Amino acid sequence: MGVPASQHNLNEITTYFKKPSPLDVFYGIAVGSLDIKELRAFTVNGDKLIQPVKEVNLDSKHLLSEEEISKSKPAKDSELIIFGESSDKILYKLAQCCQPIPGDDVFGFITSGEGLKIHRTDCPNAAQLLANYGHRVVRTKWAKNKEISFLTGVRIIGLDDVGVIQKITNVISAELKMNMRSISIDSHDGIFDGTIMVYVYDTKELDVLCRKLGALEGINKVTRLEARGE
Image 1 (cartoon, one colour):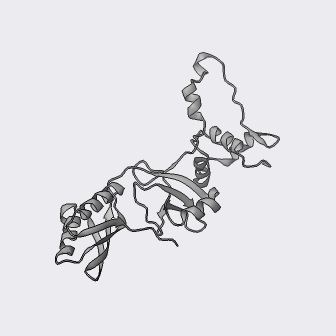
Image 2 (cartoon, helix red, strand yellow):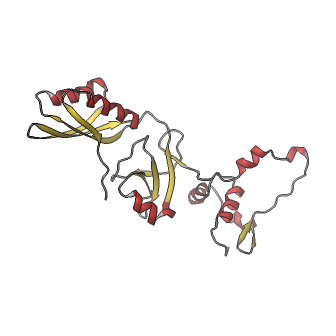
């Protein structure tokens, strides 16, 4: 239409289609729920798009309240909600470099070949993505769900003692009833350094696991596995 994709023009299109954000408009066009041909009804004034004006009778029945007007405006910094019953119906993948789980502060990044990927904001790759590819970043948050578990890792350092593995696995499997995928222990000079991969629902459950393991006798340090860069 010969006009720039400015914030004004995106807002005009967004309010015309009665969507909360430009992202919803793009997605609606992509899946075919919105008809882009309707934009022909817009007029162009310089570099600005102007919505078609609908004629209405100006009586009390047609006057909008301030609340209704505010609802019709596109929401600033609107977020894409992922994972859960109330999540947006958009396919995404969890980035392997930081393995986000519900409760983590995250953002979505639109990749060129793999669609939308979810990264933790403290991911080693986050600074580069946000600085160099800000136009591909989507604000994202988690929807609540307690039905699907996510794989995450825990690092444990402590005294290498008889029965220490059994105490650790008892906390995970018997006490907290978590599913454990793998455990790896390396011992040197009476100190063990172990990595455990477990399935959790969210960061709260992970915090409980770390506290329980840290309270065991002979355990010096329990931390979540650090995210690794790609």
